[in-house]
Length: 107
Length: 122
Image (cartoon, rainbow over all chains, first blue to last red; front, side, top):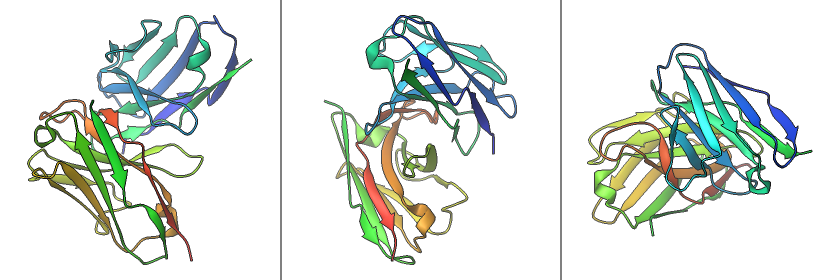
């Protein structure tokens, strides 16, 4: 199975900050990388697919980049509604696997 | 409105069985690959199983292979997960999710249900 490792596991940030979350795959996954947001007690929500394609309705302050084994999710200006846990997920091979999550908390 | 609604969760003893259902609406269910993903309390997301739009192809995580069976009834717009020989480690919220590729398998998940809790304990 492909292991996905996110860093950091948690971070504290203020409204308006630029936030970057990193995801590393244990082997090359080309551009088969998706990002999800999950708020406490809520369902996961697809933010970005295929590394950098924004899902419909997702604000443009979210962006993704990378290829191969190293990927990043960037929030250009953190908003109050962005405090949540973020997961990367590879769709390159079966089984699809997720990172352990990065919790973004209020500073 | 595109919607997935799970049901069937509950408390079951180790070794017991449970069948989860996921009712789909607002899209052409029969055209989409579908998945089950679970999340143990306080833990991350783990893919469980997938099924092709016509039900002809299925896949499972190693941890559930031989114990869980995914199926679908396209006439009823419903996805199922039959869970047998349940273990404590199967305790989780179970989500059904639509593949974002539609009839083309992408293994990304664009629509999620609200989840149903399965607790395996004596």
